[in-house]
Image (cartoon, rainbow, N blue to C red; front, side, top):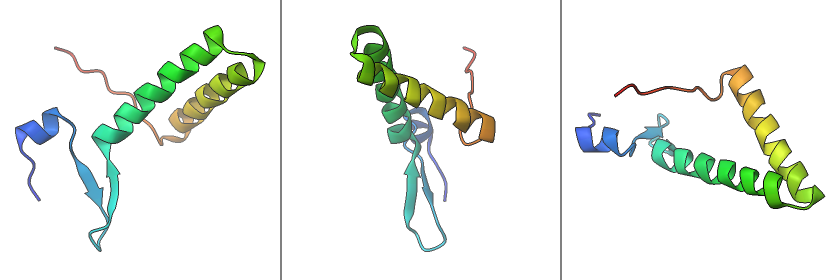
Length: 78
């Protein structure tokens, strides 16, 4: 399966298993992570104690994902 530049640029890449089942759309996963981080910021700065705990829990989850190699950070230099 080949990808075109527009697909790569817009991160519209999909991972499928051997049966053709969609596993992940990387563009959607990135947008979801952005929204979750923005929500965590709001919860930590403006939220009540339970909302602050939710923000901290999400950040702890991301730290765990980074430690286990489930998430990798890539810096684009342009």
